[in-house]
Image 1 (cartoon, rainbow, N blue to C red):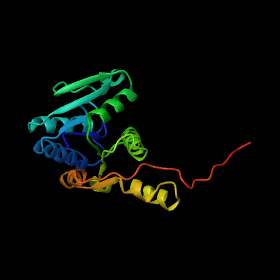
Image 2: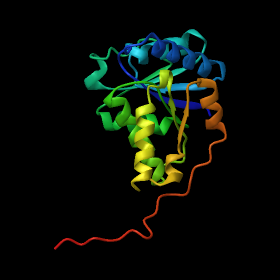
Image 3: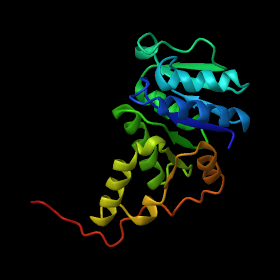
Image 4: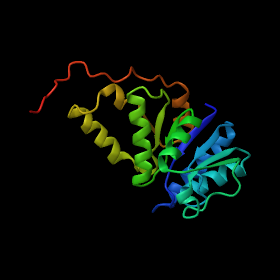
Amino acid sequence: MKRLAVYCGSSLGGSDAYKTGAIELGKELARREITLVYGGSSIGLMGILADTVLDHGGQAIGVIPRLLEEKEISHPNLTELYVVESMHERKAKMAELSDGFIVLPGGAGTLEEFFEVFTWGQIGIHQKPCGLLNIEKYYNPLLHLFDHMVEQKFLQEKFRSMVLVDDSPSRLINQFSVYTPPAVKTYHGEKRIILE
């Protein structure tokens, strides 16, 4: 693992634990000499994470759309900053630069970024690990939803196991280092329904 993308909120959230978790993750990335790839902002959990990595001698690469460069206030001290033209380009660039994906607490945008790379993993676009840093059990409702998807046969169990989870940055990254991707999603045995 040389570079990890981290998706997280551009706000601090409602608990100091989220800030603490971002700081712990930043320290762990710097300690392991893993470069942070993130959304390029200087505010919210995004800013806390980047500041921590940089303050502890690590490297941080930001990718921010021109549209958000001023709204999210792009970080002025990054190792490298890519300014792209769209959200699609942002996500594609982050995925290209990264060896895996970690999700801190965040809102709809954070989840959208996570679900895209998770889905890409299912269909074989990449074979990189995806993990939820489950600070204060923030992602428990999402994990219950994944279990419900399996029960209702909308998600295969092997893909449910792609979602690595821990509340410790160190343990989560350790899971990444031994991650083995499942076989690519197939549709054998699915019934075709033709609407006339």
